[in-house]
Length: 102
Image (cartoon, rainbow, N blue to C red):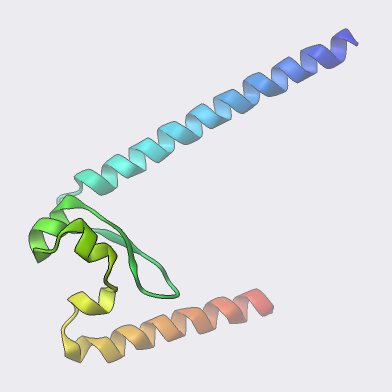
């Protein structure tokens, strides 16, 4: 029984260390995103809807965060860029599904 207790404690400690490292990594990348001097955003690949934007993007484009989160990346692109943007989106998804199925 004692050996199982020790193994359980070791696994618990290992899990806590992994969770700590993961949290540290997440905080680092969150900080890189938030403090990047370039406008940055995260968007949904299916809908092209913004999921997150950094403050620089808000300042650069003049939309509030709430406005950004109600928009898609098509909303900030010139009309003439939309066909190419959508084309890249379709190509990416076709490749993703082709790779997934094959």
